[in-house]
Image 1 (tube, helix red, strand yellow):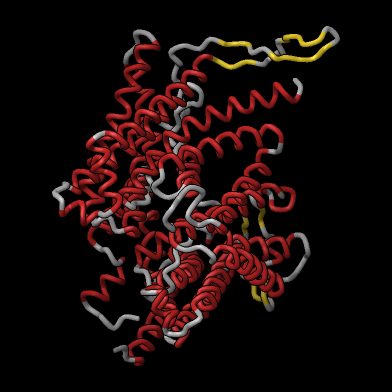
Image 2: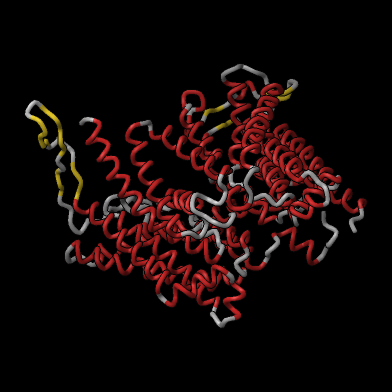
Length: 308
Length: 314
């Protein structure tokens, strides 16, 4: 393959990474922005989403599409509910103290990981995608006969990958509308701006925090369900999304959801593109140093208004 | 306020207890204690920055591994003896901390966390990239024959214990002394309210930089000591996990106390050790205990001790 098709392919793969990353990172961003809680267990909620998707789709052995559709609903709801319980039992009692919640969520991380290892086992397990047709992509080239269409070998993408990207976009637009237009979105934003003032106006802060934590975890689980037919479910898979989501949230600017989404697209795409053309380790070194330098010279993130 | 005599007797008591433990515990626990003492130096370095200065770093694994590889590479590739190699470890961590501190201290709060995390991650990947010399995740062994200091074989369990004790004692006394100087007091003032400390005329930027340097060098000394005494250097020690561990130890033991890091490290070490004896699901026990401790001992073990029994605890 030549440079052009290669580049387009890398961009598409990068867009896939960006789509899932955006969902996971927005989940972390709402928790971080509204509750000021650094949720170290966020990656484990992601992992749980993938594992529950495997359980659901294996138990419902009718047709892959039905099992997957069920998982798409069941996994985020179940993980969200678990997060709400965790919030009520642990985080609320810590009064959302920044340092203590870090340690408590490290503890949660260990618990969730070990429980998954005991029930799900150490193997990576695949989930069958609901549909998976391969689409060959055309490429245009100036040849001897002028502009012509060619079909480079190995140049294509599956329908499922395209559907993931589309689905993530729909969910994110929906979430944005929800936060901007709905009453609950208004309440959330009010809580983010001034917790005490919101409480003074009769907003049940505790319930808002619980729901926000559940929403954040549910979004991570949703991202995981979408990616699990492409990358398998494994009990240690939460590590990388956690790190990447953190970077995205900070680069995007604390609590800025559009910033988070733009940063997810930037980082997802550059990850896809850089790792195609350079050695993956060198690519990651460059990427992490870039992130560090962005923050050194712009600590509020690319799109944040307040200082972090 | 603080009565120095109590402080001095506490510090002497801690060191004496550690010496005494060598004679009353079994060889197995001696090995564990040596490891705990070396790692407690790492935790103390972390505590100096986090507990006293109030800067939460997520990149201390890099300073630890800088010391570790500084010593390991000097011994394995440059054929240095123990003492200069240890010096190289300290120098390496000093250089790395100096460079990163220069950049990272422009930020604060969450941005500081992520910047240090990113630099540490870049460092970890660099170690993997130069796998030819560092042997990456697999790591390398430092030959037993080379690990001697002044003719003392450091691989012998008894010598190893006392070498670990010496490293611990020097670092412990340094911290105990440093936090009582006006410099240390100023760090606490920065932790409590940086703007006010600056208004009072303290050069807070310089104080924070020096605190970070001391913290990094202690972490590096711990890394070099670990490589020297246990004969192994590997990229795992540079991974995110080893940046989170000192934070965990310090918070469990009690941030901003001199004995907190030792208590936390020992507690975490034996928690894993004991629970893995009777169950393979030891991480579950560890996780549940951590959640339990944060719920009921908000200031860590020695922080709680200070609150309830001994308000004078340094």
